[in-house]
Amino acid sequence: MNNKGFADTETIVETPNDNGNAEKPLKSNQIISNRVDINVLKSKLQESESKEFKKNLIILSSLVLGLGILGIYLSL
Image (cartoon, rainbow, N blue to C red; front, side, top):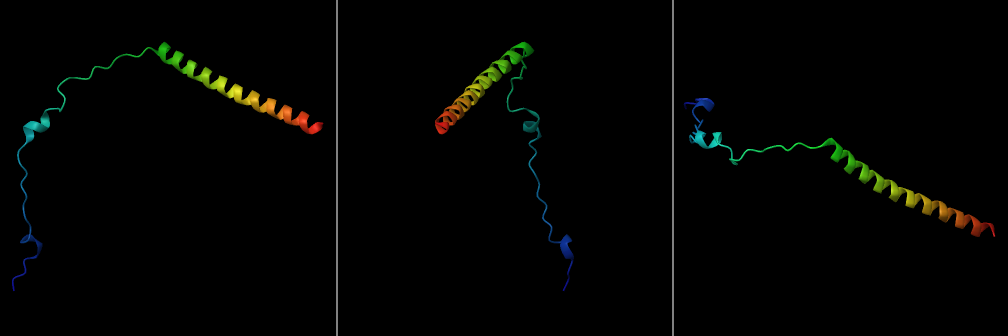
């Protein structure tokens, strides 16, 4: 009974030599970053904030008007 341990049961797996494909990127064209104007971003942000403010103002005014109508109705 010769028991050599784990050293005898190891299997060596060789990987193929595909180093040439790994060096090349999948896309050959380079990505060119465009510059963004900060004023354009500010105007878009301001526009979206004004739309949100108008929506919130309409909701708030309708709630206040509803409470006023309910108060008048219940006081009569």
